[in-house]
Image (spheres, rainbow, N blue to C red):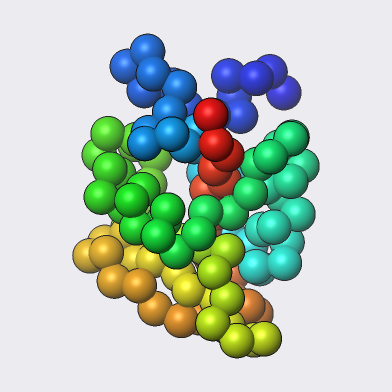
Amino acid sequence: MNVNSKHILLEGKKSVNGLEVSRDLGRMYWHDAKIACKKLGLEWRLPTKDELNMLYKKKEEIGGFVNNYYWSSTEYNNFGVWTQYFSNGAQNGSSKNYMIRVRAVRLC
């Protein structure tokens, strides 16, 4: 995979608010999502709850999001993680045992 297929380029920029954003990695369980992000390379990871909210607010600029839930890295207990619904911006807790969409980020 070449470097440009790992992330999006926004009108000549490599980041949004200091984050580089991956393409949509598909739907997967939370633990698998963490592994998939790391496989992209150095420093790629799931976004935090706050970073995911920023991605939601910039979703038109970033592009490639579907109106569905996306994983964050922010756990609220041993079994649950915060997700964000990209249809209306709602943040909800979800079991790690669901298959949810994934976008990775890394600091630029």
